[in-house]
Amino acid sequence: MSKIMYDYTKSVLERVSFDAKLFCKELEKAVKLLLPYEMEQLREWLENFTIGRPELKQCLLIVNS
View 1 (spheres, helix red, strand yellow):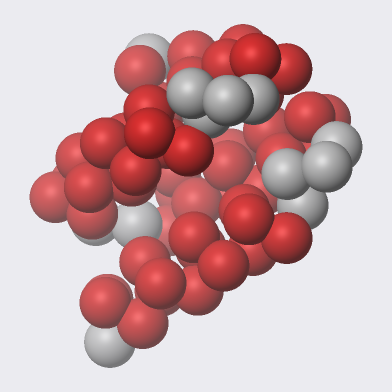
View 2: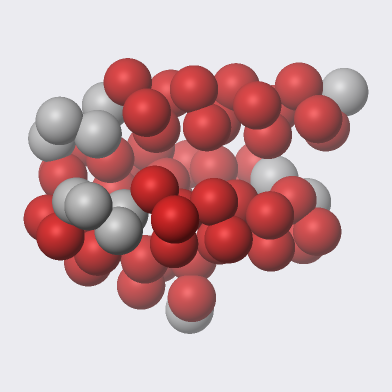
C-alpha cells in the first residue's frame, strides 16, 4: 500500500505545482504520511522535479529538515 501513497503523493504534487504555497502545503502532508525510505525517494524526485521550477525550490526545505 505504501507504493500507492508514494505515487499518489507525486501525482498530487505535480498537479499543484502551479502554486508554490499549495505545493508546500501538500508536501508537508506527505512528510507526515510517508515512510522514511519513501521520503528518501520523494526527496530525490523533488530535486529533479524542481530543476526547472525555481519557485518550488523553497519547498525542499520541508523534506530536508
